[in-house]
Length: 361
Image 1 (cartoon, helix red, strand yellow):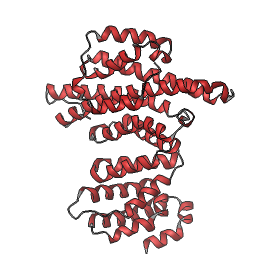
Image 2 (cartoon, rainbow, N blue to C red):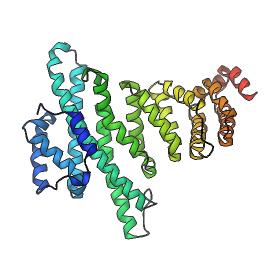
Image 3 (cartoon, rainbow, N blue to C red):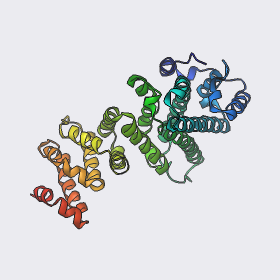
Image 4 (cartoon, rainbow, N blue to C red):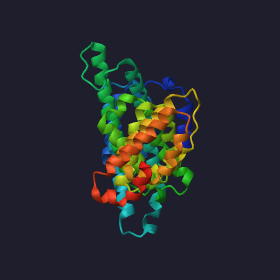
């Protein structure tokens, strides 16, 4: 199906009332037909004029499918994208002359965009359901025995999280591809990657989700890969700063994400840029959430990445002049954490001896 336009489908999905999508008469039969097609190859997604549309209709009808069909559909999409990504990565990484596979690029791009759209639709519906469930129960991360309603919500939460994990794992496989070879322009690549990052930042607003360690790990890894390998540092910095301003429960998550970027991806620049932005932030006198969230973030970051924070301490110390006493206290506590963490290693302590002396002063 060569006429697929990601931007058109995406705009239509974002502007359509999701309750208005038509119910399918026999979704089980349609899903079985598509399962048989994609079992041959993930590239069969648009083998016939109707196959892709049938799959899109199934995804649009996701909230009304039975739990069994939902699980089958999400697994089909995630496993097919994983297999397609592995094939594309292998071809791009081979020693074959690039001109020999250049003719495949438009086809790969189309297939990735088709699967990307389907992934975004499923992420959106799952995230909607997780929002709803989390608002109805306060003990989703524990075994619920208080009521049948709580128990049902816990089971639904677990099922949605499991499906979400499968989808996120397939995204990590996708992000191993050098997407700049597939998407020739930056706007095209940014639009494509945004299919995954935008729903994730909305998902992070749900506090119980951030307490599911496996989900949190996948989300952090996806964001780290987008920053390090796909040029998304600026957009993700903007989203992280928004999180720090409005959501207290994301302070620790963001500090852990930056530690992952520093330690495993050798990318301290985002941490440094965020600290620079924080140092210039001016808060409204009535704003209590922002200063508290950023204070918690600075304290946690000083525990996890003391060396990087020490290098930018001249910026952070400017917060001592901030009108918020919460922020001023967090800077003092962060200084103490940095000294305490670095003092545990004599070699590190010696390396930073001069800076630490200035810090204590």
